[in-house]
Image (cartoon, rainbow, N blue to C red; front, side, top):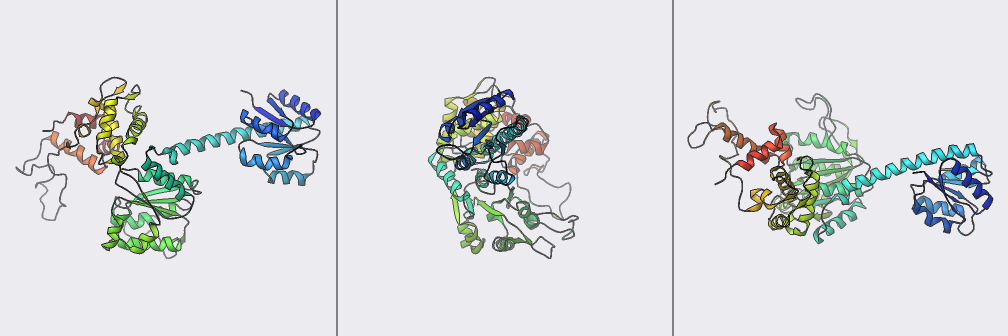
Length: 473
């Protein structure tokens, strides 16, 4: 398709001359004699606009300012009888891409057209990438149109417009990190980094270094200096998940960072200035932690200026079909089930009745498992759903306790371990040990089958087959 130019020029002779020259350069040309007549033609997919400043009605320079705001993707080339350098500079400052002087020199016009169409393609590509990022990271990436989720998304938009401190409250698996990413993307910091850290999952003795960084030699094993998560997020957003799991001494250090906008890496002598927005999240009763003295009250009020309560999946069952289809389309190719296009009505009803204690994360895992274990066909039916979804009272039983006491100095290397039957003291059969490993991997990875299979070094299909084939009494 040829590039399309719009010429807004009230002088008929100049307009015809421009049109002929542009058509010889291979452009399709639209014409208008005024700003009012040319404005609706911009919706025709214009690649470059040639604008005369001496128009009747709305003057060209005033229309130029409007175009820069309303159609930033279209390069505007001003056509003017004034060829002074200072006038050209002034036009550029007002938002013009370039200018041509009357009478138009055709060689100059060709060069301007080449630059302008290249610029249009570049701006279009940037807009497409921005739209794609909006779909992946902004509020458009959050699936759900129920009243509770509409309220949450509106709160995210409101908070994104300011620098107010935000805390996301809700159960595990409800999508708090996804909402934190959406808040970052909708904010003026969207072009800065987004950095996430789970405070409860990180080793306590390394958490200070992970958050604030450290200098080489700060502690045994600190061979090189490392930037902490706060410095990584400088100019952007730091998401601290499970903030309630942060030790009291680090709470005090974080409070100072929020107040002074500086950090002191472990082993450093000088503080470093930072510009970072902290968004926190927790699945704990943070107010009760404050009342019990386990969370600093001053840090609580610093972080919880704008609380957003994320509903559990059971509180928004109308979103379940939309989420189920979202995960179906997201995972069917990786499961080598690209032909699966639909979920049966009966299966959707079962999904909506389930209480989903693991929330959205558990629903995603269920759809992934169903795709891998379902029989051939284009419809995901009830028979493909995991047993714990079909029967909410069902939970995969482990052959022995998955909790293991830490070894002590008196423990014998050959003594009882997690691989021994606690009743007989004899080592378990290999199949039961493998089964235990599968369940431990799932537990340690919050039920995420992809990470569990990776940790075990097996294909995810192998993990599903083993769990599916297990007979539970």
